[in-house]
Image (cartoon, rainbow, N blue to C red; front, side):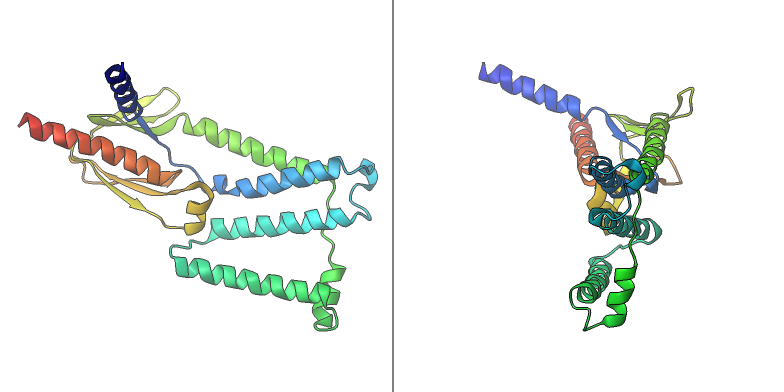
Length: 242
């Protein structure tokens, strides 16, 4: 029985690596933290117990939700606008954010130390009602759904002996030889890697002059290991045949 179980487990493991899907996503997918914070703010403003007409007026939590949403959205936009390829740039970014938060806390908690900053921060109350957050959720959710549908018609598939490119509504297909396929993995943005494990995957088919570049492949490390394991098994098999 143990031998059968081991054989079954081995067969299941082999079936897992027989077909590996690689999808290149647009950068909009990295806005999921803003979508999540907007959902929290929308739920808070909806169930806070205030009537809709007065949902954003004279509510201490409304300003907090507004600040939280704007800060997360701002950081998200910075991630989409710039690349942070090294740990040094990430550290510098966190230092700048820490200094900004420190000044903000000093201005709020100790207004006598920085009166100008304290008065300026106290005067700003970024408040929005529940309809604003729900509208943001719906718009971004529709974009996410459209991106997901689009990726169903444009993706790459790695199999045991070939690389397939599925694209178009009518499922047009391009075939490339998988043996001797060279793979390069690049992490161009540490933030994108932390958010969705994303990176750039560069495929070099043996009979193609131009490399195939896939941007923003999610969970790239795991997929690169699976493809490498598959290609490594093929190399051993070819050597044995010889």
